[in-house]
Image (cartoon, rainbow over all chains, first blue to last red; front, side, top):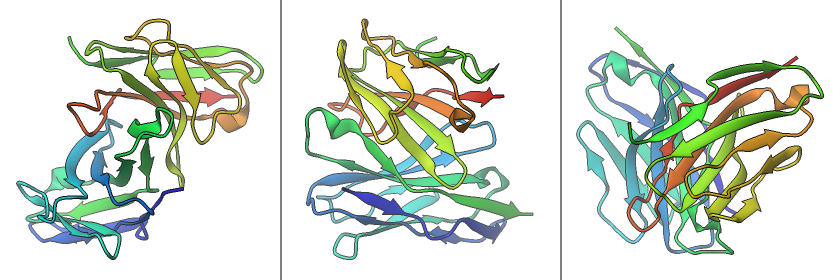
Length: 119
Length: 113
């Protein structure tokens, strides 16, 4: 079974600085998708960025980028020029590209990293 | 408005009572999911559905029942609520052919007393 590990329960960053959130995963599959979700205090789950395992190029969305190391099974999120609105819980998630009895769509989440942004 | 709607947003119930959490989506996504979120555990899958009338267990299904008679609705029922089911519950949907991720509802905070 696949697992996702976020080893940093809490992180803190100064406004305008850069922070990196870590995520590792365990899988025997070669084709899958990885995601970072943001959950602000409003509780809403917001997709930040996604990465297809077959793509070597790291995904980027404005101030958010990932460092995807497939061999190391690592998927870290870098937030540049941190803003107060970035304060939230961040979840790393894995999804298989294969369909096991309809389970293809199941997202497997890490336990989350709570990010604080200091003014 | 189009989207995925969960109701109620907050619910307090007593131990042993049956409670149903509602989830409605307007995109006709084939896949729908129920997760619970607990501190220190992240989000854990309770049940999922690949299409109408097709449901299957996730990681933590005990004590829960789901149904999906229509594509747009996926209610979650706690048959006899226990304090350990106090949690935040999220419904999500996905069209795997188009969107690799999920679209989440705003969650239901359930407290069992």
